[in-house]
Length: 332
Length: 279
Image (tube, rainbow over all chains, first blue to last red; front, side, top):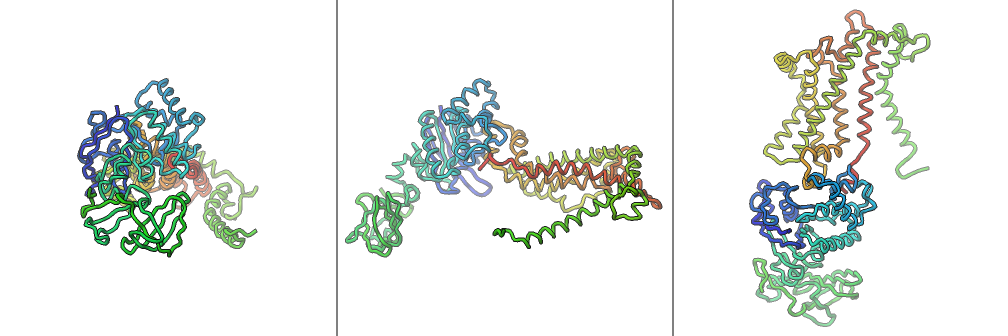
């Protein structure tokens, strides 16, 4: 009861094409994350699904019904916004109940649903407060509660954690994951943060410049990226890209993840000097300027003492390098 | 005590400048109010002194109120000002919302067209307006004045309000759309309360020229029935004899209603209620 099909959706603002033909299928109960750099069209795609923007062409099908011409309120969706977007003049309770009231739901039913949602999100003590009297995290929980009470076919999240501080972000992320497990609802989540994407998603959709670059599970994207863009976008620190010709390879570009490099003071594949070292405790990031490979990042687990200027040898783990052709696609 | 942001000479200097300005700005008003409580001899004998027991006289006020129609003039002024204000704010805000919220062909052009009125004084069209009012039989009605003042106030209102409407969070409006609120409900219940301070600014800017206007009442509605206060006060200005007591009393009274409206609106200027809606 919550499937979504997007068929060849295009969206242009005047001459600027933001979505260049998107095809996507989401099955019932899936948690799908749209991820991509700023301006890649992920938020626009979410708005098209919500019905807040009309697509220039293409179809949006929710639960087998074409909703391309249906207003947002009738699509059976609920949306959580980055800026919470609570109604400032209404109490928490009325904020959550407004949508149902507009739809003509009987009052006892509204109360029942608010009761369930507020206990789920531990909002009971705040039901009579106004948004101005709540903290950021509480406001975002109210916004999520407002979505939950509607019992929608589709939950849409538009960067819901971007306005929260780091600690709260981790908590709220956890709550959203638990919510998905409890409700078993279909959720679509937009973020530019690949950590959120990796931790929450059943399926990640990587978008770039209005096109889908790859669709797949988090580990699938990490282990077998379809192209250079996905390889560079998923994983932190970013994958090292080395000009194939400098290494005497036939591929245009060779990619190695920083965590798939080992260093040694005596010998190794690529000789280089340490430019900078970041000590994070659990791991250490070294920036090496190599004669053959250029500037590369190496991630070492645990503490590793290396002074800038020291000479080190980096070696990629066997079988953990990626080869990309001139068109950017992965060579299998 | 020397704080980083304050020093005594600078504080004194700033206050001296501000106080001087206040005195200059208030001087004519105080002079008018002071002299309105004096006898004719008192006004001419010593115009700058406050009323003393000897010169104190309420003759001005009794003349004005005794004239009978003055209450009526006040009523006219108030009806015209409040009604025009209401329409300017209503239509101005609605136009501003449309311009800032919806993408449609000719949006920018329409915005420019609506703002054009700021640069062209409406009085240039007086003759045409008079002809129009004669043709539609609206001469000597308050409706004529309300229509003209609404037109006069709209350009600035649209211009200022559309800037402020752009700042209202899109997410909030979209949340309303998803909850099934109509565009009118979104406008009246979500957007208008958030732009209340700017509405108050526009109200003040619009109200004062309307209340003080002499031109259009004189041309469009000079009849006894429809006279406004400013026009009514002309009654006491004669070519040979001018009843200063009455004029000063009428002007003093005329300050009151605008002052009250101003106080109401300025409270809105200060109160911001946007907090809590978005981060």
